[in-house]
Image (cartoon, rainbow, N blue to C red; front, top):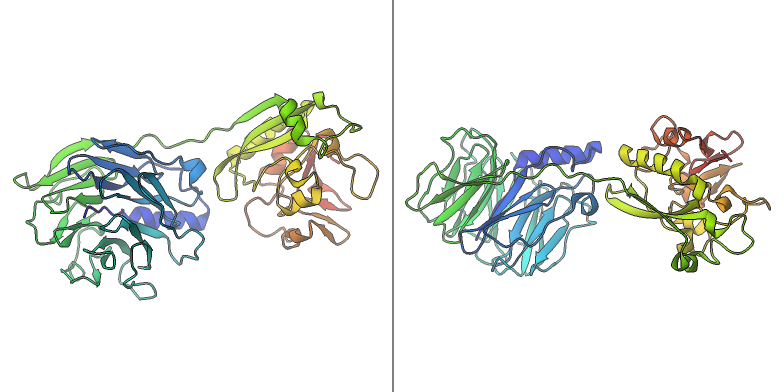
Length: 476
């Protein structure tokens, strides 16, 4: 069974990123896994952003990191189908992305994980897969069967991967100190009692056993096949991160973080043969998007009579439809929709470009018409919106929203407070402005300044009440 595991240092770094709020998609690119094509010749590499490089193998696609991965989420492993007509990519959050003929059998998304997922591997049948977390917790999907785990146990070193056994209910767990834990399969040996020069970063099933690979390219053979060599004697330009093997163990490869791949085969040199250097591409970048269009017939049908109707203080020809890039609460790149006055377009483009550059999170951005034009329903859904032909609550005066010159941003986490009453009521927990949660607006953190730079006022500056969600061209 081919198997490649991940570089534990990268995964531990990902854990730190998750706790500090840093964006795991920003930084130097690095390969995290390799898989051999079933023909034993071609292979696939995947980097931490889910971008796949195919070498003499079919490219089934990869991820777009800024739209498909959360800010604290990275791809940690890849596993192929039995015929190589597809593969799965697995993330630190336990999400699964199938490509080609691979089937989605379930994932750990939404589960309260104690530690991030650090490896996943298909069963020998290809009809399921296991996931393993940094603490040794195991999760089984499809025909995979749970046989035990190290979750809740005190470990000398973190678990860095799983090697499947001959059936769907057996496996070995591998720790970074070379320790091995067998579940439903014979224990073949370990490096747990040996002082290693570098930690074990990967393992691969081969010939009824497993191979362990260390960050310096050292390889430890616990299979019934002959030892074919390692990179332990070489000076490497980048650490080893993963290994893959044919089922029989007559050929295996070691991948370095820079995309260099070394091959070991029967009769070949014991210090390996350089197969290829497929350096990951440059770090992905998400670009700010801002598209402006007039209100056409189709859009008029969407907004009339919910947010616009005859008698409103602004004509349809004075409104513009905006499609704008933003980051959601998970840090994913999204495209939102707004309707605003034509004379507000330039100001808002400048402000939202700045918010995008800041990485400010906006939960959702849909036209208020998706909520029947009801302001309260839109706020309760934490929806960011602009134009709505309505009056100021409790008065007969037109709101600045009725002119398309005001916007409410993340209204649940930035509620309106007036004489002790909170709107929306569900926003009451966020009256505490010392909370540190994505999407909250406070002076001095860039959002307020992005709007005041174009002359717009903020409701959070009001004295008699506080409208933390609200920005307008007039300041009211």
